[in-house]
Image (cartoon, rainbow, N blue to C red; front, side, top):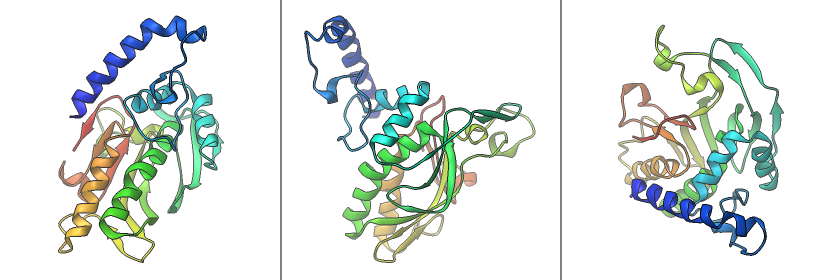
Length: 235
């Protein structure tokens, strides 16, 4: 289904490209949801062009920060800098909290922050309400930035963490006090917890490019890896 939606999105974009001159001249006014040139709105119901608009933010840091501001998300811009070979920050922001509190604030690319807001609003909270009748109020993450290669190997390519383009999530706390964590609750005796974690994993795949969890390999048994990198994977 995900691949089909991507092809449909491409066909929609191709069709809209033909109409672009008329749209720019104001002859045709497209509804915001079907206007690929309209900025992403975090509160808007996700549609066929949501991922396209999200990926525009990876190339346009100014637009990305405007999207965060429009969503009412407090953030602190982080100056671009190189911290090592293949490591550093470009269009990064510091986030202390969103609609949930974190065990610690984090620094990540603006695109990761935007993808997180979409995930939190349109996937994470609906999953918690559906499974528990309660909202997520706390998220435990294991970090965003680390100047290292994939899996910490001495050779190989850099991890998306090397540029703050990823976040690792280990657990959640609900408003009613329920705690749900990896790896213990992935196969929990409480079927709601196991189902919620799978809902969260699948929901993250709607907005992040790469989502890896316990079913991928042993290195991800205790967290969800979410990134906005060059590849696509939902495992």
